[in-house]
Structure formats: C-alpha cells, structure tokens
Image 1 (cartoon, rainbow, N blue to C red):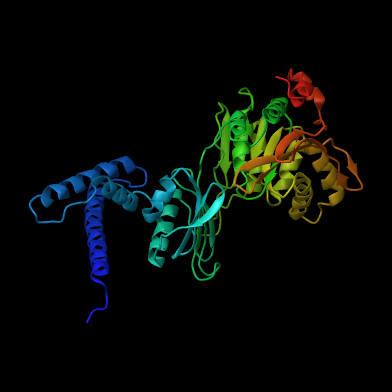
Image 2 (image 1 turned 60 degrees about the vertical axis):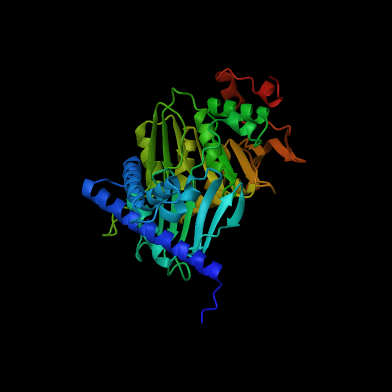
Length: 426
C-alpha cells in the first residue's frame, strides 16, 4: 500500500509530465538547430525563433488532444532557449540584473550574490548537469580545463567572467564561479549618484586622470575595483592612446584609441602561454600614452612599476584592505620577479611611481564606497612610503582630509585648479 498522500502524488506526476514535455520539445529544437547548422551560442535569436516554432506546432497539435497542451508558451520558449542556447538552469540568474555573481560549491548548493549579500538558492543540479554546463561555457570561450591545467578563467558571451577549479583540486566537486558583468556605472558622476563618493571626490579623481597621475585602485573582492577603473579610464582624454592588459577582458569604457590585451593559457602541448607580465612588456612597444593593468597580483607588478617610473601614465587595481596595505603590497610583489630584485630598489620606485591610491570597501548594507583617497608625494622614511590623505571616510561620510596630491604642476599644465576642486567649489 502506498503511503504517499494523493496530493503529493499528483504534484510529482505533474512535475514529471512537465519534465517529459520539456525533454521532448528540447530534442525537437536541437534537431532543428543541427539540421539548419545554427551555432546556438552565437545565434541565440535564431534559436529562439526555432523554439517558438516548435512550441507553436506542439500547441496546435494539443488542440486535437493527441498531446498535452503547453501551460505557458512564453515560459516554455524561455526554458528551451536557456537549455539549448544559454546555460540551462543557471540562465535565469544570468538574466537577472540584480544578481552580481553565481557560484556552485557542489550540485546541491548553488549560491548567488545580490546587493553585496550571499544567498543560497533552491536550485539543485546533478553532477552531470554541472559538467555539461562547464563544458558548454568553456566551448563558448575557447579555453579548456583538464588535470594538467585544473584552473581556468574565461569570458562568457555576455561578458561575464567564469572561473572553474576542477574536481580533485576542489574537494568532492568542481567549483564554479560566474562573476557577472553588471555595468552600474560608466562615469565617475554615476558613482556619485550611487553614493560611492562625493561630487568633490569625483571631480578630483577626474582632474587627476586628465592631469596624467598614476592611480592605484585597491580593495577587497567585489568592492567595485573594476567598476571604478572603468570610470577612471572613461575620463582619459580622447587624444591619448590606451593599451590595457588583463587576465580576462573585463574593462569596458568608451575611447577612440584603445587596444585591449588578455592572457592566454598554454595549449595541449604545454606551449603558447601568454602571461600578464608578457602583455605589460608588449604594451610598451605599442606607443601607448596610457597603460592600464586590470589587476596586479604577481611579478608583473615590477614591469608595471618600470613603465610608470619611465614617465608613462597608468592605473591598475590590487587586492588590499587599505591604501597603506596596497602600497606595502606593491613593494612586495616585484620581489617575486627574481632574487636580484631588492626592497632597496622597489620601495623608492613605488614611492615615485604611484601618485594616488583609492581604497574601496563594502559597508554593512552591501553598498560599495570609496573609503579613502591618498596622495603619494614620493618621500620614503625608514623604508616607509609617506602618504597624504586627500579624502577619508569619517562617520559614514567621505570628507576632505587636508592633504594634497603630488605633481601640482601637472594639474596646472592641464589648466586645472586642483585647490578649488578639493575644496568642493563648483
């Protein structure tokens, strides 16, 4: 005798019938896609038209009673497109503008980040589904993952960043992170509207970019470093030539003369790898007026410092908990380049190469804010780089701190009255 309540059995039956219907229509859509030679990743609009035709034909047949009707045509078409052309059950999160990141710890634990907060979703996958999703995502990016290369960073078609750690390196299951490209601000003025900084701080940063100061953007993961870097880059004068170097393309800003470079992993033969350090060196041969490095985290920091120290304006991001710690890290990373690199060389080089440090953070409500903007006048005292706070956050407000940026003559040459700007005058 069955102990299952009749209403539960009906729910299970209806769910099973829905799954069977979706599988049946999914196969029909895939047959059409293969027959017509459609690339489902690049031609999503065409896949949608095929799905609409398949669902419409099925709905017409349901009028005769031969097959079950489709409860909601729009929902069914969306689900089919997600399965065939998108990324299946993850697609609704990727389509949701409020979701900033999606990650899978194991098939039964799928998380999202929304407004700076983590949420465990109700989505439960299978190991086969996760593997199929990863394979489909990597196929769209042209990158690979295997036991010889168990980590991968890749860019998805919509600009989202994919990071995968293969099972065996991560315990139990492959770990998957999708950091969505959500463009909430493209200009410094828009960051003011979002409450990230004050109008006077934004005006000061824009003036500093125009004057050609070297800017280091620091903060924790998801603090908004790339967004701020995009906004700073958007303030670069149109007559300058920009070359950027990133592990994966993430920068998005309008500029008429910009070459974007990204790293490349080694091929199956173990050759052909292009590291970030290679890109920084190569960018100097491309006649740049400005150089932008998406993030420094290893020995490429030395090559960037050498470029900035030679008079080439630039900017980059770095993981750090404060402006002071960012400078300390900039002094440490170049030491990874080799035993012949010493702190006696690196510390004064950092002091003379970095002009401003902007530190970002996330408050208790998940709001990303600029916490401090400090100037680096170039002085070193007992191996400690001196700084001058220009803006600091006190009592929840970003306030003028009294310090001034270095190289005031550069502001003057650009026709900028920096004293008036930092004072908050209109």
